[in-house]
Image (cartoon, rainbow, N blue to C red; front, side, top):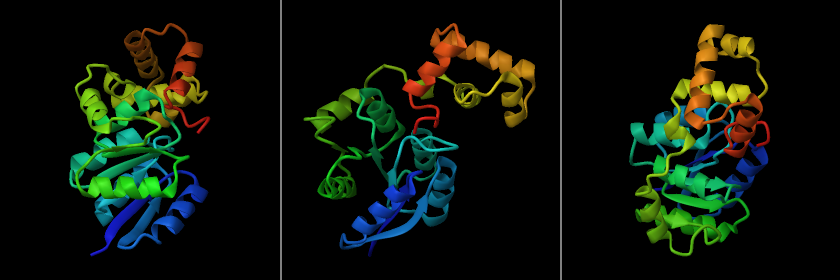
Length: 217
């Protein structure tokens, strides 16, 4: 039986490259491609892939949140994160979301195959550029009490923060989310209090650093 693989990345050239390479891997079948977080969730429910190769920074919904929702619906799916981000926080957030592997986009194709083989055997795989001791680092990450932005903010607060960082004013955010201006102001105040940030400029800078906005993806 073929290994069913779904690719989720907002860059078409990346998806095409992965498809071309993976189709040369005996026993693997690409069953679909998604270019945003919401789409990959829908496709995962419809196609029930064995593995999803997931980017972090995508439109509509980031890969971390998408991973959580997909695995909540079907814990048997294996998620391999393929990202340009090597920072510890991104790796930690993705693994805590349930990903089984985290590899970098500048890796060789052989490394992706290693990751695929590892997750099939229910093992964790981390790129050498991230970890020299994947098993130990994975254990430490899962037992870490360090909170991420995704666990601090509610879903609506996260949406408001993302829209703020993308340059939307209060009225525009209210229109896009279908809520009142006063409610947006309340969410903004709550976000600033939770993150201990006291200006929109700092809030925007923080969101970009955390990869929340797609502005620079």
